[in-house]
Length: 278
Image 1 (cartoon, rainbow, N blue to C red):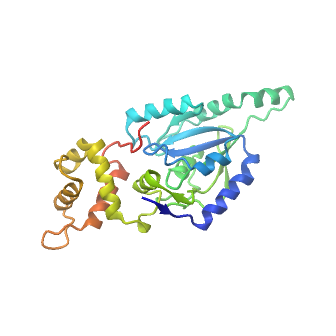
Image 2: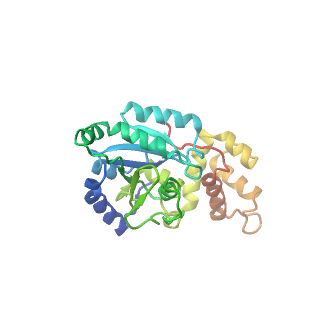
Image 3: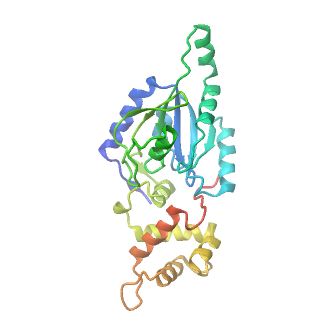
């Protein structure tokens, strides 16, 4: 599935990030733990490659716990520290600060040699739309200041946020890249990082059911009380019939059924699922 979707504010955000890099010490990259590869924007990675970073694996309450640990190790093997997070629960801000301070050890040694007592660490927060970045910032800053929503691109202006742990956060709007090809576009669509309105949600749901049948058949069986050995379209039909997503004469309303299935997945009612394996 190829998706061309690059609103004007995405281009503007890229420019803002480039111009703001000199203001920060470290990059906090918030990713969706269900799609650890697709939720990492290659353009942002390229732009910020010379900056130290910490990956915040957000939404780990929704992702497969076994896969979470595999991804933590995979990032560690590539020299990047990754932290599991669930932005809806209390975040250990001190842990983030301590990890950042260790990464920036040389900077603090130089400050000490120059008798500079500034313990603050300036962090830029980046992430694709709907990665949970704004919720993470609100949680870590213990405030309700940043706009939060499930619509991609809801954060649209640069803003600095102070925290109690000597961390200064520079927020940036979520940004995608110009052309999403293959699995990346598909997986970002599954998690609603790309708006359902611009997609064929029925086709998307069929792709999702193909994945679920192969990787998490027991989740389908438990949630919908259906036989996961059926074909994806038969599973689609059975879920629609069992959940009352019907137009007339027993005909399945596929759009309504697709929205029901995606709501279950995105809310965690379908179980803890990781789309991309480490």
